[in-house]
Image (cartoon, rainbow, N blue to C red; front, side, top):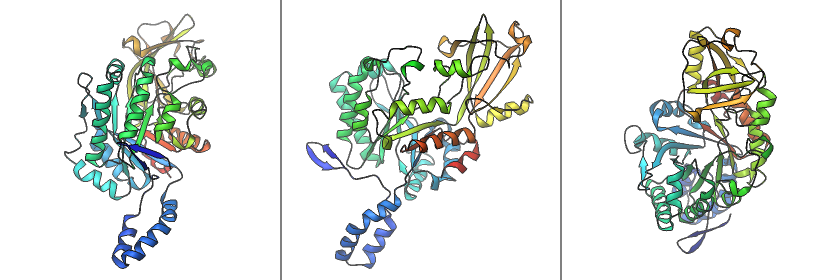
Length: 417
């Protein structure tokens, strides 16, 4: 346990375990107060030890699929330790918190208490993807502190078990202000509440397109996060073609744009554990995939990301076009098919890599404007199992599943144990 400063007073933050309330109530009713107190003091460490899982399973429940996701999770609540409703966002103009999940409406009024009754921690996420807005707010001392106060009040008022900060697209120049924000929020959160920090991946310098590994170019200060975040969820997904070494090894002559290759995830873990305690790291595990439009010319393969897919839609499409998904070199399922429609996408969703002609692209597609190759790579239960085993191999705190929306391969629940 460590010091915890809260409004000028030094307190001790308790460990995070599921206290068996029914057992405590039994002692309160059947025993005298004196016996209960003695029993509680001596037996709680043993009870906590037995109740504390050695490997944590957390999952994000997105507001855009809240009903299907809630139903799926409800059937498997005994396997999950933490649920993060992907519920809050930040108004970039005012800095106000926006409840996208509408947490006081509909099924949530009964669903959340039921999850708590089963010992599942409720740790909502605050998601913000505006780098300019994040920098503007956090670099203003008055606004930053007000933001910290607002979040701490939210956690206290709603009796959440903690809060998950998922601020993405941050700039390197925001690094010191984000660090101050995390420290300030840690200080303001009520005793016993969990501060979860969801962060981007960090690759070895030799795997990056930009070889510079200057810590000053990073948006996240790993040392600060390790000090103040109770758990750190690393988003080991949306890999695509960002790893030049793996692109060369697995993508030359092949189509390779995975959501999350275990070889890539392992690199991320090795970088993180240099600074961050393994017992704080939650490996982010995807349940989805992407469909790309692929062309090849002059030694270059171009990937245009058309849309995200889930297991259900990817398998349905494969059945419709009579394709057979096969396990690829990234451990995911994939298949190709042809289309006559060329779709242009934003430059931000277009990547070009050096490659010999991918051997799976039909010959007629290589130099044709009428036959376009589509490539689908997606996650199934086996791909999820591989990430869970990887997290266990490195003795991490656990895994955080993105996303629990009722559209993942249902077989993956059998690996949550």
